[in-house]
Image: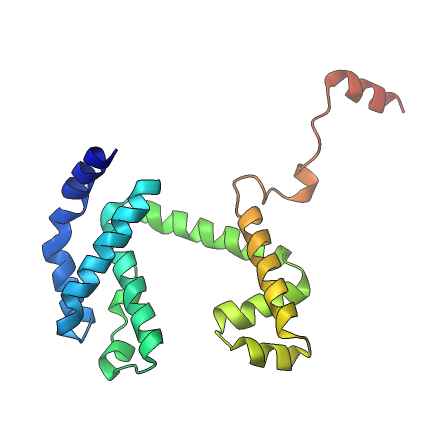
Length: 192
């Protein structure tokens, strides 16, 4: 597996090194950290590929780097004017956004919205405040008048339910989700 994975990495990731380094130079103001981010991104991509090969290696590489930079900004809690003002690295790679991907992303977003709407009211409220608004857990607990443990429980339930709802067949409207009825059972039901 490792030889095949090494070959995949050499063919699918390394050819993007030049554009990847230009990307880092454009969006990350700390030039002394570019090589570290590149190596960490390569490591994460390689480790992830051991589990499952990404469908689009270039987009996965750039997304991994973007996530690393976001993590570094969060850890530092010091956001430079350039990092805060230049959000290019937060966007999807423009050259990767085909009309098909645009439509697919819209459909995926619609599925996520339907899944989010199906969450219980309190889970939805907690999930929105913590994951979207990024409000600290303690503050969410105080605003809602519940314990921090309850916040954690609602997040766990919400995350689990969203994952279930996002599965392929989980978002079929309820009226269309009927148990499979054998023809013989249909005849009996029709007689009643």
